[in-house]
Image (cartoon, rainbow, N blue to C red; front, side):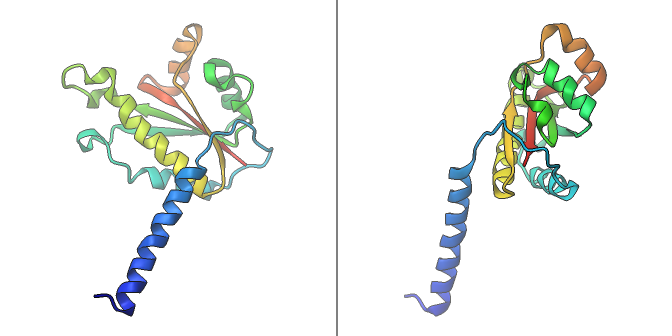
Length: 167
């Protein structure tokens, strides 16, 4: 038997479900950005949102590096195969890395960093959609000729991809 309180609760639960469904359905990739910059508070909100993501065995071995420097964005546009011709226009690029020291069982080093990173990327998509940002994931394919330079500039941990955001 329901009463007015239970009905309010059920309505509240349904509204939360509808909002989440809308965000999931509205998720998108967009490679066209305006010249406007995203406020740092918005970027911090995205980073906070991913701090709640689960990870394999609760390792929390995924970390990010936020790039908004023009020269570094241009460099990424030249070395990331999937970012050529557009990624430098993003307001910010969030590089996603995995610490290889966390993956020691069997051959999990070959796949678990990317699974853990995928959870982070999905959360970035959902959060960016909720925040009305344009966004796009770029796979971790770095041109072989540039891989040594990429590691010198951004570190030698496992690169799992980039997430470009803008307005």
